[in-house]
Image (tube, rainbow, N blue to C red; front, side):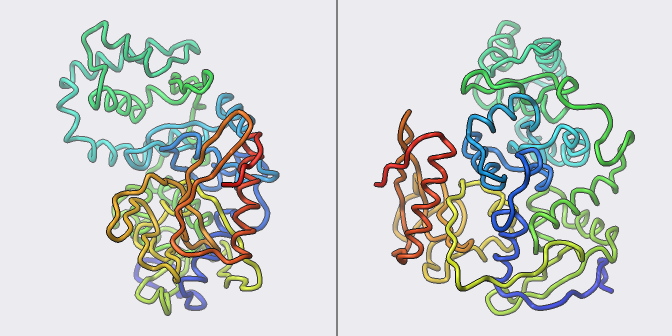
Length: 390
């Protein structure tokens, strides 16, 4: 038994094995999940800082790779919601999970945001802004960001710049606002209690902080495969102490595996009944076109560099992208071969075609190029257009 709970697990995975195990856990390998709602429930929370690319990340993990239009429809219907949770950035969450995730993580996000809150005008103005926002979205009145800004401006409340951004974020963290239906390509805000059911989803009718922590840890380890204590703490926004307490509460449900080779020095945790530790299949090359903030990368802080390509090790695996002697790249998204980053991509989308511009860290093999072309056609089909080779 380890001091933090759990048992010593089997095997000693190297970086390639860790990455292969994670790809399967993320459902980027094997069978996809039935729908985007299932994907978000599986992952627990999905970073959606870049909204439309984040929908592609959901579709990639879904059976049949649904169209962008159908994923947007599911979002508008409230099957999946978007709000600030875990960290000071947007995440997709399920309606049943929104309330307990906020109770668990919003206090930490508030503390991180505290240096910016004095610019909002103090408690009286904050309460006034919250009242205006709550009244604006009641009874199914989903409002755009611009509409909410205009209402706040009429009352002399923060309505522009960073102050306005934090007014909206506070309202999300306090359970006043959450995402509404899309209006064309514009997003809207809705009343939290009109989109989120009462109670605390898997926790039941009452909230318990330890139960919420355990639920989030289980969800994370089941969908991320092998991860360190610092990985979960960085992803969840919770402290290392709280993370270790959660692992202790899980007890024999979890086990540890010590990394070896190019993963030496890292101690990984996994659910005993979770995704099996899986070595990569060297006979098949698989390419992924991942959005820049895909959970395959942002889920890990301590061990994120395991996604570096061994043949282009000078290139960073995750944002920000700075190649030696170069400025930050405008290419936001990631080209991965067997889960290892080999380049970046950006897209030019018209009503009929999709063209991908790339920044490749090393030449692709013939098999890798075929995999890239296949995924480019898959992405184009998701958007309902034809792929136009560059």
